[in-house]
Image (cartoon, rainbow, N blue to C red; front, side, top):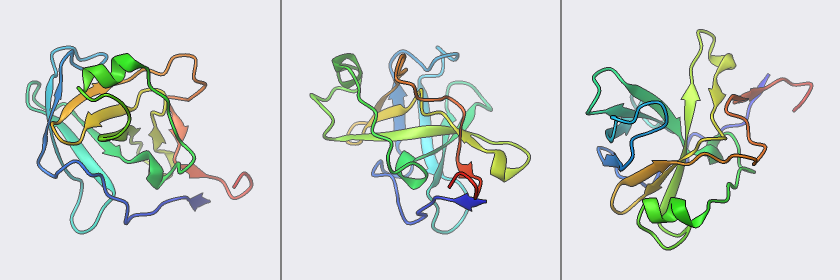
Length: 146
């Protein structure tokens, strides 16, 4: 197995930032405010996005470039409007990880990236319908397919 990872990559959203999802996130419409903090100690590319509205609701997120340097989602104007920017400059894209008991089974949701205005913390989870991206993309590839 091989992991395509660059642990030195960091998100540009400040640690401890408050992310505000105006319409909540899919499946959790009442979860609108999240804090963002590093996951673990020391240098890490992983962050915890924890709801301040719903106790116990949190997601592990990472910059997609850590595992998927080829990932370049395209967003419609409604996504940029939701985060109050005119276009792709000034936004940070994160993907939500689904953790499993075996770390090598972890997947990333490339179909529903989180788009954050890195200056204000306004955020939206975009749904890239028809894009061909998978909501359960493995972050680890086997040596045969790598």
